Image (cartoon, rainbow, N blue to C red; front, side):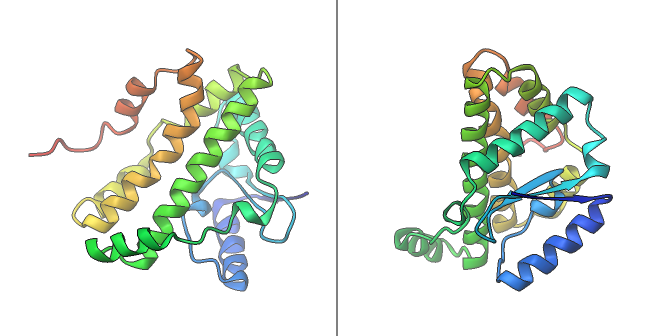
Length: 200
């Protein structure tokens, strides 16, 4: 396993941009994560943004580290990062006017959400409760970037689709905690998205 530490978010983003360009990876969004994981090189790799990690409480930091370490166990091979789009999805997207770039990104967001669900479930099974609740709570705290993403997305159907699909990551990450009675998913989701304007 490799671990890369970056002092700042911009250093991490620059590294990811170069790596993606080298490997022909077209998805985006992971440059904003505190931690990200991949297996593009055939083995697990963690990328850590120290600047963002230390914005979390100590218990949430521990939860984040355990969460990402669990990803290396569950999702440490390239097969977890390569997703061919099923032909029926391509057909439906074309019929709805959704571009192939947007469709690939939607699939990426769905995949990382499912992987986060599996990771939380594993950690709960191993007895890591308090740190995973703290980590989940941190995911449900909106920041300036979340609000900006909504302002940029809200007027366009395809960007709205991307915005809402991206929310699956937090929702599925916390679902096992909700099932275990450790987290109030509905209340937390309302708080996370409280900046959305009601439909007219």
